[in-house]
Length: 206
Image 1: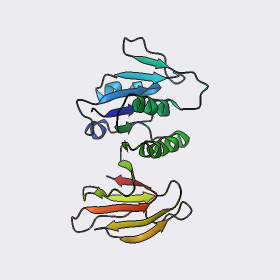
Image 2: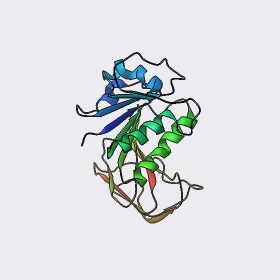
Image 3: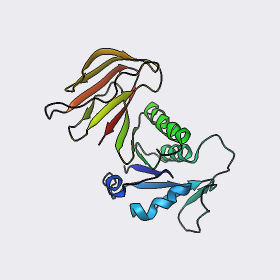
């Protein structure tokens, strides 16, 4: 099945970098002022959602879901739920991390929601790639300058990092003490990361 790409309204400064992740058969959901990225990304939305408090309601024949301004879900979270409802099992979020720390954090935590549903999901910004790592081994190629593991909830146990400057085996990382920041691959090897219990946010930095 095609992948669901959700486009938020946060700044995208490096369109060529972000466009490198997109596929011809992606299904694109644009959220509210994320529509400002249609020209830079050279994409036509398949679906538009939003309360349109930050951009005007577009006059278009494209399917549009108009949301109330007073609601529990942000436009981006609603778009994610809509993608889940439509049966997508692979998600890419772009334009969701930026100047608004509150919205950025909510969007990062949405990766946990998608993981809980057993779905694949990543966030891409101008500099990095973000995803949740658990028992399933994740890999970091030497193409990335740095990578970090960040605990965004609960206690992560049996954390393992191999083929990196700083290795770990059977380690524990809590939200209160983050010590797996700014690691590097070594000797051109691909780093391997897994978490036996719980999960962590893996951030790979270009």
